[in-house]
Amino acid sequence: MSQFPLPQINRLLFSLMAFVALFFPPFSYGAIPKIEVLIGKSIPQIVIKGENLTKTYFAPHQINSEHEVSSPKKESKTYPGKNTLVLNCETSLKEKWSKGILVAELSSTSGVIEWKNEIFKGDLNVIRQPDKKSCHLVQALSLEHYISTLLGKEMNRNWPIEALKAQAVAARSYALHKMRLRKQKNSDQTYYDLESSEKDQVNGSLSDINSNTIKATSLTEGEVLLNDQKKLDPVFYHAQCGGKTLLPQDVWHEKVANYKKVKCSFCQTTTEGIWKRDLSLPFFLGAIKQKSRKLVKIDDKSKYSEKLRLYFSDGMLEMEKEEFRRLFGKSLIRSNRFSVTFNHQRIFIQGQGLGHGVGLCQLGALDLAKKGLNYKQILKYYYPSYELSKIYGKSFDQM
Image (cartoon, rainbow, N blue to C red; front, side, top):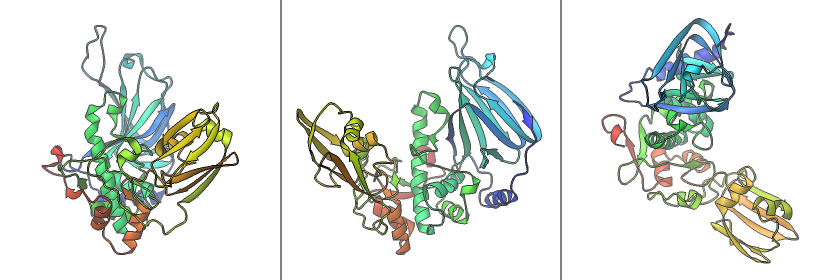
């Protein structure tokens, strides 16, 4: 670790932090849960800034020569005043911490820490494995503050408040479901609940919140969607369905009983989700790993079909459209709503929608909010078999 003077942080950010503090006072662990989110993955060096920073090394899984788990080790140091701490994940792991996973907990008396020119509320945990030359960075924060930053990333923070409230409930439901699954993990992922990425949900820093995201979060605090067994399910959402939502099993082979397909004409208010691709035959065959075969015909009934058939001179190959999308990449194939045709050694793809198409359609929610529907009505439309429930309190541990 090394220390350098901390440059003055923008006054506007501090004003914003004070504003947030009014709406998000220190939370009760018995009421609002704490979530741990992976915000940086496989980082060779981590540089953080803050006031009165405390660094605590914590090695929870030390193993002795007889392969027995020993008591946890802790070692703390505080850096008074404004400081910059540099943790070199390639070289600075001490020998006495070399067995098992190392956690370095980083906290500040101000309650906020700067990383990569962004201000984060809560603590930051650095996760290091002895056989790796990089670290994961995990943010530990109140679930409700997490939702307020997420709204500025997963949805436009200036959209109508009812659309933002629907998104807040969906995102909170998904996060709590992932937190419930955490205990079942047996890897370094046990040190965080979910990732800040398209794999899970993208959350942000203090710069991503505004009065709308704070209001949408506070007005739905603790509200989630529960299935008919009064349990949490993974609650999915996407940008634009293209006319009809899909089921989880259509996309990931994961059946979630309470999901229903719903028609959605509400997201057709923009041409942004209409896309086309013109691909060369060699590129197409290479992407689907069929370079040595001669393509004769493609049979695809419509953009709403879930599978397509490729006829080669030596046989037929049936592909699910989600697998097709995975092979070509989500930037090229923007949704699961597309049709494929083959003509004159070219492959033509016409698609509609953005994202996987399961659950809440965000552009549809925007249109419904503009039409005057409230967040409960929006959620009931896209999740007709789920019930809205406020779960913080005595019932939370049973969800």
